[in-house]
Image (tube, rainbow, N blue to C red; front, side, top):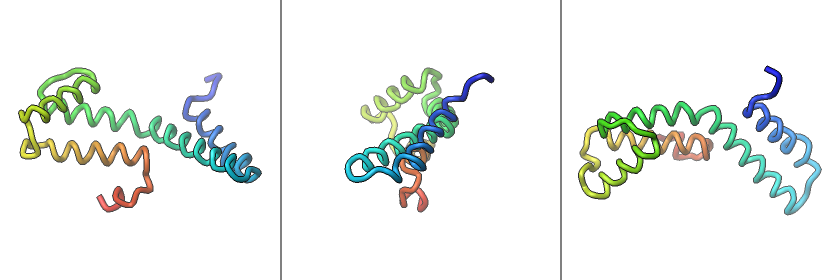
Length: 119
């Protein structure tokens, strides 16, 4: 391959911020560099964990709704069914789906969240 992957590009930018730029920055600029490095860390996790989490989420919703569509459409249908009272937490698999989806999203966005480790 003649070019770096998206994951490698994001990792290089994050590494530069954390290892070269942030040690030399102070005050508000240092804060913004930390915010940028944290955003890049989220992108890294999304690139590595996101596709698998999305595939698993889609499989769970397909099993719940007995329908196959895009993940976005499936989530829209699921929300509609919950809102209209057609399914609820007593529906087999729904609570487990919601819990796992939340865990997966938190693992990408805030992996050090204490509640994630307890779950």
